[in-house]
Length: 341
Image 1 (tube, rainbow, N blue to C red):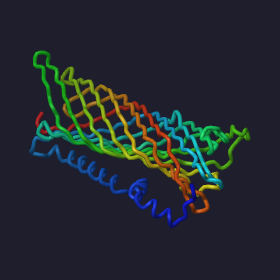
Image 2: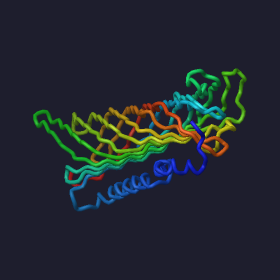
Image 3: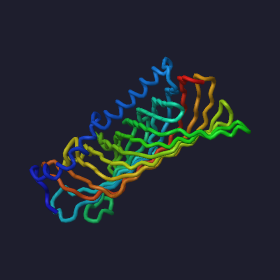
Image 4: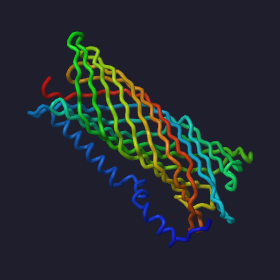
């Protein structure tokens, strides 16, 4: 494999410009989701004064979340000169404090719309960075264990669906089924700092401040179930299946053979699942308190790893599977705006 000069690189990347630009915090897809979410929230604020059959709620959900992320990239065959890079990176026990703002609207007791926006900060975590022998993609030639105590996450999701209500009048129980289709974006900015070199064993790594910015976005289908055991208490279950585009940029800041701030760039197709189980208790027609445990599992197919050396050239290798798992505990306080209860 040969190095690619800047002119050739421009042609290779032209088909990926839209995907690549999406890693920027301000992009069309993210802006559209934010706009729709704001519209749903503003509609909620007007519901109390509406003369139509429109029920809605606005919720605030603080949560604590624990994430694991790992990926590997292979070296390129046929490259005789440096740098030919292969990496394995692993983030474990990344604890995150997150705050989510949610809104839901039910029109005419049937049509349903929901939006959720969340931002979180990373409080602690561990990272391991391994550089492999690029000729066999197996032998570890350098390894460090690092802190992952910095960074942030951002999530936004919107969905539309229909509400079906099944009532058992003999025992006064109600089952709500809400099938939905939606679109979501999930971003993570993960850091590596305060490292200790273990292979070779040279001790503290001075000046380490590498990062990995990733994004998963795409459509999903799902189902919300709510079993109202009493008029005020309900058991809730939620499932979502996601089809996503995955793209990310890495900055390996202490490797002078690589460009900065973009040393590596990743693209792949991905899927994800979300499960949530919870309980909610209504105080009256205006307020309820909820508790929920949520798990997420995301993985990519094999994708593309684009390496940017410091000399301005670039080359492609294979990106192995990227995995992201997350478990969160959520507490929700919600305010109802009801037009017909």
